[in-house]
Amino acid sequence: MPDVRDATPYDALLLLSFGGPEGPDDVVPFLENVTRGRGIPKERLKEVGQHYFLFGGVSPINAQNRALLDALRKDFADHGLDLPIYWGNRNWAPYLTDTLREMTADGHRRILVLATSAYASYSGCRQYRENLADSLAALEAEGLELPKIDKLRHYFNHEGFLEPMIEGVLQSLADLPEDVRDGAHIAFSTHSIPNASADTSGPVEGHGEGGAYVKQHLEVARLIAEAVHDRTGIEHPWQLVYQSRSGAPHIPWLEPDICDHLEERHASGVPAVVIAPIGFVSDHMEVLYDLDTEAKAKAGELGLPMRRSATVGADPRFAAAIRDLILERAATERGQEVTPCALGALGPSHNLCPVGCCPARAPRPAAAGVDSPYA
Image (cartoon, rainbow, N blue to C red; front, side):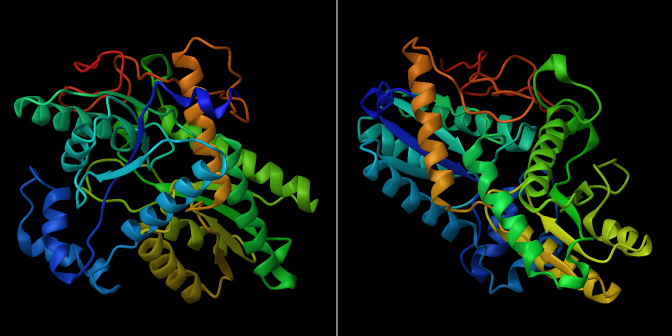
């Protein structure tokens, strides 16, 4: 990997995330932002908001992003990487457009973006690129000089993302009662998305059943399960499962649901389950409610011992992985030879999203891709 002093031509990093409410009065306005254009009545949003009200109307995601920012800044300082870090959200303050306006005012013209989603999908990648294009269009309308924006590649198979999750699964297995530990199954959980979105995730040549979204998650699950086997000598059966489904019931989404899976595992005589939320960077609301509340209640109802392993969060190894990805991308921009860190069979993801990658239902401009109007 090149020296940290070669991190230019980039002059800033933008942490781009989903956002979340930070108090009861924020919940419905936040959900209105999330569902804008779908015509969902306010009363229905109040019902959905009960998940947040159970936790005082506060999503943990913003605090977790602040912790990640602290971890990144410490890692950069410790390794001599002089790169200021900013933070912007899709659905709540600090809003992306405001952050990009601030970065532009501060003189930044070559910006790298780190999205808090490790995998290819419309909502996890292209929609963020559309958000970036919308914000750039807003700044252009204000007459501001626009920065050039690149997005870091998907990091699902980077060692610094995988190792904290491997360790988390090992710790969860160790926390199970000894008499059920060796027979425990692992449920690798991620956000369910519509089948049609999964099938078209990733580059066009890889479209098909499940697309890159399912392939990448299956690869991460396999790598973690194999590492657990290597370190314990025990082969734990595993399956990729889904959670947090929303939307119209007649539209097919990825299955099985985590709670249905727990019922099936219990019925088949499995003595215990470890749930590993590999689809999520941090322990935000969908982890706290769908796993730590609903799935935990289901396991308790079944009498099935269950543990939930940690996400990577602000783990120093994850922060180091981001630094590694920045230096990798900088070297590529300079035309230097670089060996990307990408474990397993799928190899490193693309730096520039190609045409037709993770398409939306209606075409919209997207930044940081080969077809970006803001190259």
